[in-house]
Image 1 (tube, helix red, strand yellow):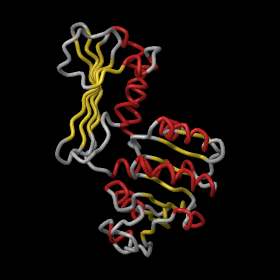
Image 2: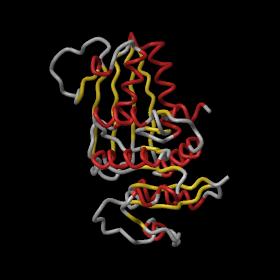
Image 3: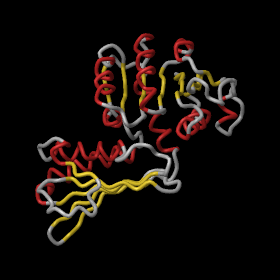
Image 4: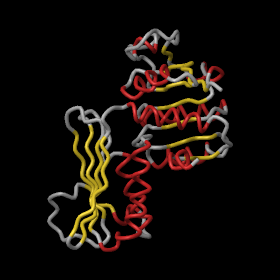
Length: 267
């Protein structure tokens, strides 16, 4: 059965990758594309804007106008616009996949509340590979975490606005939970160059913003006599797009709830 997809952030890097991938899949149909109010891309064909053939889907700016045309909405925008997206999907009772990062505590609370009435997937990283890394991190931390100094290094393109990345923070949360702690108890940000002695069970975070790096994450467990590293490097945005579409298909007929990519890859 075909899943009808709408994309918020249609002219962005991830939006274009999702539109391109939708066009390649027989069981997916792009039926709506959204950009912010005043965008120069409004009324353009979403396919042409993504560098492929015309799809007959014009880019609009009103989510409320397209909810009847879609089965699931995928959002890759900016944190400042997520409130409106969630409110309109909530009102229309439409499932929502969110890959937008940098959400504040109030916005995350809003997701939990909306998840009582609609199905939502919130995942800072839709990559299947990254989500397998999260599983490995839990296993490694449970096995050697108490004896290791742990560092997370992430790198992204120079235009990325949040640091550490949402993925790095998610990795930190998995590690902290496996240590029996919370991330605020463990996290040390901008850890390189700190003069004070390292605290036991701390998790060091460091970020690089440069060039056109799509996304690189490395977690290092520094042990006595050996180092263990778990790393992931994105070579194109297609892996994120494939993950987002897989998430949308999984979410289509799910009951209300707030889910993540771990739920998707487990089922």
